[in-house]
Length: 330
Image 1 (cartoon, rainbow, N blue to C red):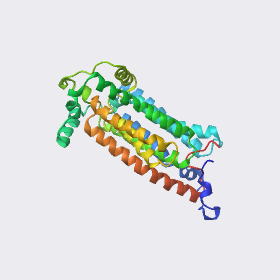
Image 2: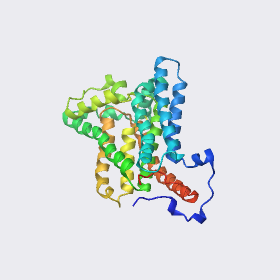
Image 3: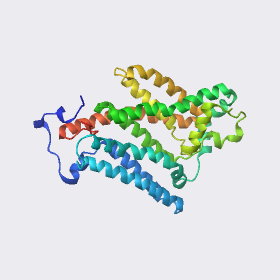
């Protein structure tokens, strides 16, 4: 049975809702404001860049994503689309789609918004805070076996995400599970990708290329990682490490829900994958240690804030007699 917020509070205890535009805005959830705010900030970043053909192209791309999200969410929250699977699917696509596509667009957007690089500053911060640059320290352990081990887990990041995002976002019937996971994941994505624009960098593999003694040997998984990064990576997306933040957030979410199926079986596997994925970001020279620490901080913040914000919003909706936080398929 699907959960709703309308039945949580008797009608006699509900407060009167506003009308018109305020009524529509009242139905917005925390994830709506988060995603629209993120896309708006990205557009402002592009607008502030120096005029160029690349800036014009970036503005068209990011502007289209903002319009898509704002229009789709408003159509749903204003009840202009009938309840049912079309409405539920439209909402999910309008919230998730622009965030996902914005990452792919960042390959061209990031050089426009911030053409510089803070690699040297990040490396210096590593040495100052931790006394070592992990990518250099791990250089002596490079071999075909270690490279393939970490490349396998690094590539496995995409499977960990897909096996959680798609089933939960599009098929979960639990408002709590869906709300907490989706909001937490969107916090990771929106905050992380916003910081990319402020702290650009290429990572040790490029900025410190001449300092490494051992080249990575070719291999099946390493080749797949390199082809994926070269074809779809944003290239200057290192701080914070979302390859750290996402799997760690999913581990925390899975452990928190370990009393429920399937998380009581999956959380140990997710944890093992997460630890190795984080290690892979350092071993394969994609990230500085400060990137990883920032990613860990973001993951714990998202895992903490998500449940609190969702419960508050669900309670507000119950008091006001509003529809569920996430439109249901019915």
